Length: 121
Image (tube, rainbow, N blue to C red):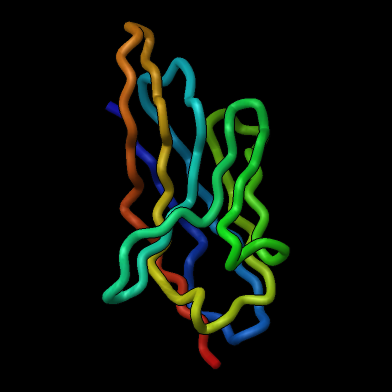
């Protein structure tokens, strides 16, 4: 079984910064990509940022230049540095591990429990 544990959410004023962390643990041989999604009330879940095992990154247009996704030195960890936060960034942020392969070759996707980010104006 694979678990994703997120941390780092909270309440911040507009213009402030937060750093989200996500650690994947369990029977993991490899992970193709780790992603951050978010879901605001009444809206669909959207991809915010992604990073592949080779280090390639991708961002939603709404966060380009403000958010940075990176992989940690510890295996299977990912961070999301969020700067110049705006009220419209308020959402529950979810970590997603895509293409998680175990030692038997089975491949699945996994989600974290989500962490609330609230940006006040």
